[in-house]
Image (cartoon, rainbow, N blue to C red):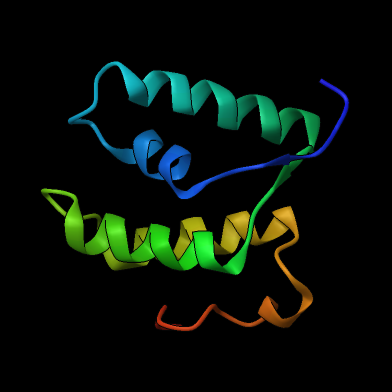
Length: 93
């Protein structure tokens, strides 16, 4: 793999969704590869969708502090410059 890879919300959500036993490990493998290769890229919209989905739509929902930590980690994937602060809709605490 040589180019940058845009990661969609579904990959992030599946990596945290234990109710998807076939999709979860594949999503986790992709994310691990992208972290190692430093080729992952993401958008503010994806970060917002991820937070809303994992805290409100997954059953059981993810703890908000854990979801915020995930969002902060994925900011390393260089979302648009105007997203240096926490994305809209994601509380800072």
